[in-house]
Amino acid sequence: PGATVVDCTLGLGGHSEALLSTFPSARLIGLDRDTEALRLAGERLAPYANRATLVHAVYDELPEVLDRLGTPRVQGVLFDLGVSSMQLDEADRGFAYAQDAPLDMRMDQTRGISAADVLNT
Image 1 (tube, rainbow, N blue to C red):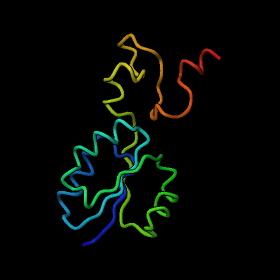
Image 2: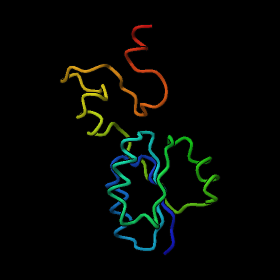
Image 3: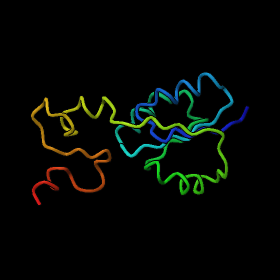
């Protein structure tokens, strides 16, 4: 009861939704570097908004995020590592070779340079 769990790779929020629905007193902190994933997960987790805090961050920023949120300890941490199907399925994300689209390949399209820039410079 009252546990705080961190989903370090929030994605579309499926694991987080399962945690929040299974444990009605748990609090969730969800991290993702992908702003579109955060938006969609926010919609999915809206029924749990009073227990879910979603943060635009990379999982290696976890200590800073917890400090900023005033959360010195957590009871669980989840990592589901890999590329999400959303990133592969959406041509404008530039991950898939099956579709003709600009080569981007950034998990967070608000930071850094695209794969096309890397290859061309």
